[in-house]
Image (cartoon, one colour):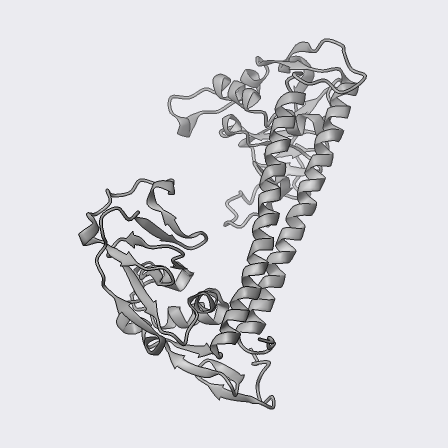
Length: 400
């Protein structure tokens, strides 16, 4: 890729590309020293993560070895960086905002007076920085790569004057704050939708104008199994838990379908399709496409008393998924399956058709709002990524 700064007036060529004349190209050993200070009693133990930085070990949702005694751990002062030598090339590095201790499996580095740790953290997370960290890591395969301090100190990096480093870090921190706020809003909206689903889909909360009793229906009375085959010329579809029914070509895995698709089942728009062996995990969807699916799936057509968009939400409700689990057959979870004959025996409460439509409309509005917010969040992330690349290479300068 061409360097956008190449041969620009006021720029010079270095190990890390073309940078402004006022900037330096340094090796990390010139601006960081290796700290081996031992921990002290009463200081919390933290772990370094790729996406959350330094996190208390107690907050990590995974099985971990017991904490080491303080005098066997490494002390991290405020402003120090700590990194995971096995995952530094993936961005497993953080700056401490308060004293803590970490495992001796990490590397702790103290910054000199001419460098901003927050600026260098941004560089380590950038495309160029990650490439340099990877290039200086050693190992036979990626899962064995290590970046010891002896190699870390040789990594080249661009270094603007300190005020410019601080300003760049400040700008990118503001973008991070905006991204965090957008993500928090999405999380809150998801919780609101989850609560709304629980209330509307169980009849706990009724929409205005609806008071009629819900009716207990046997699924075999409101669905008819579709065993239609002979659609070899139709598109091959896949049923997913998160994305619904989509073209099989959009699944990022090797095509394991048979060349002979004469026994593949036809699924039509409005049909319910579900993974016979994973229905107990909620892998089902109402199809918006016409095509064929593997014989391992079950296809059923809802009768006129059911509204497809309502079923999309209703069949994801935990209480309903639990019924799918109860009626699944098999000795162990790997072999559990819900054939249509067992699916047909399940009894569920359904509201009148018009109320189904009204509930679906409310939940679809919530879904659209979530999609809009997620698109805005992704746009923020992409904008920040592009801005970070321009700021950390000096392509765009900041006023200090």
